[in-house]
Length: 152
Image 1 (cartoon, rainbow, N blue to C red):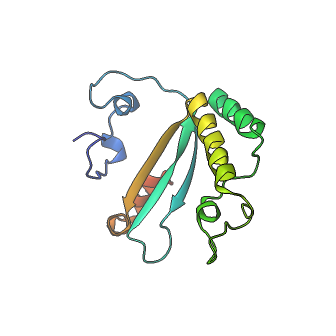
Image 2 (cartoon, rainbow, N blue to C red; image 1 turned 90 degrees about the vertical axis):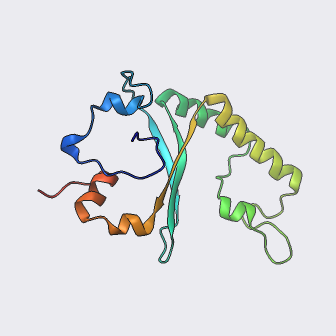
């Protein structure tokens, strides 16, 4: 079973394959290790959630510098808060800080965001975690999967 299979697998640290094998699991070719920055956000950490979703973008240091320059240079320097951006009040108006924006301005704003993403070649990353399955793991297994310190 490879890391790309849909079923979650817990691998004991002592039996894990070399890091290079994780880079290209389907073809078995040695991979390169590169430093990347990943910015993610999560949803589904509230009580009663069946799934937790973690998603964002990854890129090199230079790609993020280019991205930040493009993001700020387009004239739409307002941070993107998706819950407020897409939600409307009962009268159909956008919520602050987007109140007063018409559809043309909102579309242009999203186009600017997408242009910054596309031109800098940052890539989407994400995962969905079954909360019940994760909760069924023992503490060391959960720590291993989240990068926490393992108890001896």
